[in-house]
Length: 331
Ligand code: TYM
Picture (cartoon, rainbow, N blue to C red):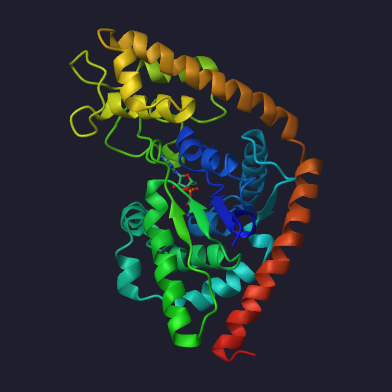
């Protein structure tokens, strides 16, 4: 099969402003490969209702996420861009996939374990528990070969592979088994203030998370204030030097310069010099993204792209769902 006939797909939850982690872990890797595959990117709004949301806020967040895709370089002429909830097949196949999934598998998902700890007094919704089979449906509906995601989503893509295999064994060859794509550098960007934790959208406005729409002066301040260690050596060692290693990863993922070359260039230089270069590179990137974002933040342009994307996505999604229903005897 030619690469162009292979499908690449990814998605982001519209649950807060997009972070540098989302960009480096997933969006950038999608953008640089979009011309090599039949490409789909979607706004995972069904995945955003796992906690109660203000409807107006969710609608705005979907538009922001879309505008951000475009600002980061997703090209509607090369990629089908759509909103998950516009393609009803996601919900139906998601439901079907829950019957291929064991309770034990879902209980073992790291994200479920982490998120269920923060549910508070209203308790854990079953939606949070069955989030991975819905994600499997997102991927399987489009006969996806490659799913670029950050490290935290690897387990969900691997589960998707297992579920596809299980379904195919039980009901005959129906789904394509996807592969995950994890970038060698930048797959887990850490919180700048607490570099043992992942940088998260939900961390709110704090000094540890860089949002793509942050004021550039603030971005510089966040990087200059990033927690490091008591040494002065710029050396990549995730165990002993998580703060410096995180900044090296950010620099390397943005510029493409490899880690040994960065270490060599900064031999004998201090953390101040190094952080200034990281800040320059990040601000340069965000300046471009922010200028593009203003161009694309137009509801009419966004609606047209979403409507067109949903139409195209539905054609493939409905074919796959029909195949699955036929295999199950639901047809
Ligand atoms: P979400 O919205 O949490 O994150 C979007 C993408 O960003 C990656 N990511 C990171 N990468 C590196 N460093 C970080 N600190 C960091 N934080 C987040 C995530 O790994 C992800 O790739 N369940 C998904 C959305 C989804 C999806 C899908 C993705 C739904 N269906 C199907 C791919 C295919 C999620 O919550 O991503």
